[in-house]
Length: 354
Image (cartoon, rainbow, N blue to C red; front, side, top):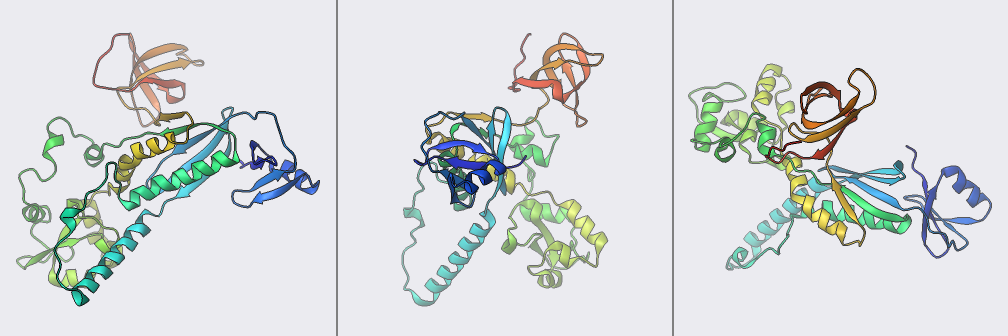
């Protein structure tokens, strides 16, 4: 896909984007001027009364980056990737907090705590999450001014955080959690065999240690905690685990296998999905939602046009990583490629006759 050039008429009315070659010709002939450099936009020297073909904005939200695409007649004419500054904002806020606390402890008189007087408004989001919504909205409004946008489609996905950690979780396990029946320190002592996670020292005082340092974005999740003797804890400091154990690859591998991947990115998407959707609706354009991929249990319709299994099938799908699915219709149909399938109903815990 090559990004096309945005075009405005002399009254700043958005027109259908054109190719780079067409834009060069208009500029060379003196029929247009450069309106802005990023994204590159030209403005014509005449008024255009014709109504341009509407364009759809498609948004693929993510924690660190968000994909934006402009689609016209099922063809992508412009695409961009928006990088978010969530971690940078978090670091700045923590730095500001430490400076304020230090100044108050040094120079100010005692005053009553004010945290109980502060209430958060309905729909409040943390600054790192609000930044994601506002940044996406800023670019959506820019595209509305530069192209004849007719509708918006945003991915509305929700991640099951517990299932990410444990794919086999079910039933009452959702309510129990990883620390069922444990205190945190007791759990860590059992998890790390009552030894220092880094040197294996036994029968010495052990300290709770953050594997990924908090100063570098590490969380207080139980999966990011380990036990370390005082010398190892002091020596590691704020180093990353890969740097600290660079000369001990076997120990590094053992520690890494004991940890679990961070859920921060999935939680960020879950927290902002409705806020973003509601914000997009304020633009006054039709807003649709969608999510990608198939899940086992979805009801799909497959229209197979080639091969031995030509036909139309409707039923529940069993997803396979190979992309070749099984569909439970009147009979079990095996080996249907995902490219023939279209979701007609997401799984909701009910059985239907069809």
